[in-house]
Image 1: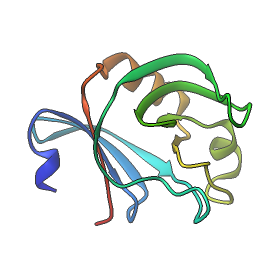
Image 2: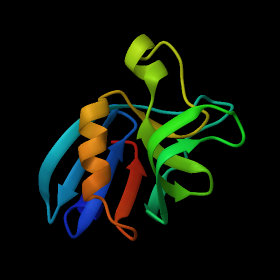
Image 3: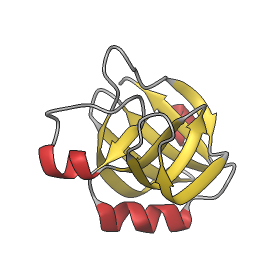
Image 4: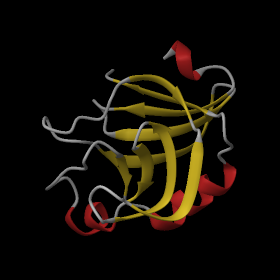
Length: 122
């Protein structure tokens, strides 16, 4: 999408179930992504990363959220051990789950506060 063509963007497609890390229109990394359920949906729109927490634990759900990059309220992109173990048989509480731990660690190191996050359906 046009919103992912300029700057530094985590471009997150809820239809294709992936996150693409895009810099000035060039895809640098791609990850499988899992989203919230109907009861706790992942919000769509343009956001920006406002806080990063490498060893975060959710205060609401008391679950680990390693490599969390927060973009809207309590919603974040983060590694999910459950997604790694169970795949799409489950959902998040609204966050964008990534199952590639080494990959998300690399992405966490590259993303800066203020980088864009675009969540959409293709």
